[in-house]
Image 1 (cartoon, rainbow, N blue to C red):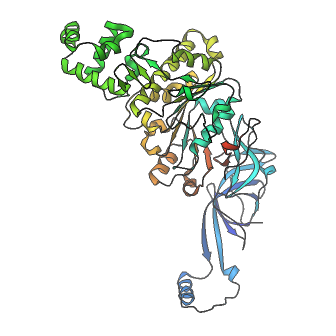
Image 2 (cartoon, rainbow, N blue to C red):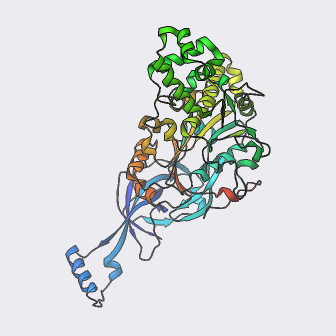
Image 3 (tube, rainbow, N blue to C red):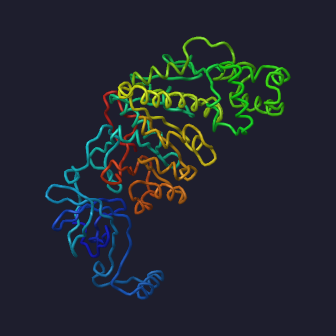
Length: 494
């Protein structure tokens, strides 16, 4: 036995903890009464039957080195645990708390059989964590519901954000009816010498500027003839006049609009457009577009003005999605605006393909896989300073068209609250910043205000997963990706 109930009110209980009982914040216990209550410790504090002024006096004597012996000290000084009620079990059924336990109800430890009500879902991601301990009860998440309603993965540096994403994507690859696009700014998802990644996934497309170094990969090369003015929307700080100028260029030159803008003589362009576009607008627009595409002459690391050769990467991605592959786009060698342009161009085409297919051919739409798009350092794509773009649009409308977002960040407070609230599933792996914790707590679909202290204390690989598709905010110890073999054997991250 852990202790007894001494107070209860509105989904919370106070427990007088038995002397020497091992109780930690985050522990889950059961309370036996007429029904069984499952409770989680959210705070601990000391209590005494002795008035506080006498305790201070006793402490003063202890400081002075006096040895004090107290009669019945275990009865006079004890610990109180504050806990929230998670679920109630009655007649083998489980439901939310609408009642409270009686005075002196016994509080006991749980085992994995007590928690059999936790649903078995598609993708295993770890084991249930009770305080600092993990029990051999696997935690899994429902792929389809999580993807269509968006996922947010948040943590301070080194807490395991990318590890969770790789574990989730590894599990997703084993399911039918799913595909994913990962924009990888740190070249950590595919894997390399000494680093395990998703390269072992059989259904894989890896697009990288360093394709010569990765057998089986494809070149990440985008030709200017494949770009549309809409791909630049919300990517660079373009004025209204500059956006209108891009539209005029596209109307005049069609697929050669970007090359004409970047290579044609300014005076000749001015003669073509007359007063529709000012010379200053042309000059500044050329500079900005060239900067975003990171061109050195006619060629850049990713973008090119030269004649297109081979199959477009947009066609390769379309085919890979239809084949339910995991697609990793390596953007580690380019700057932030070039990365956002690549992501915008790819995301634009797939989102509108899904939307158009649903409108024109519902039968073919049903055959399309659920698609999740993974963004590392998410505030760069839909942060408060990112402006209106395709990423923000998907966060609001994607669930209607089987397209979801997985946003990964260590600073969720930089993402607008209306977008945060659209991310119904949140994987929280430790946030020391009060502003970031508040942003997550205030935008969660489940009430996790009581978990603020636990969130601050989470160690590497420890998570709280909150989602409307889970019974309660699940504390988990996430599997360590480097030890996931092709046979899907798992061990916990140390």
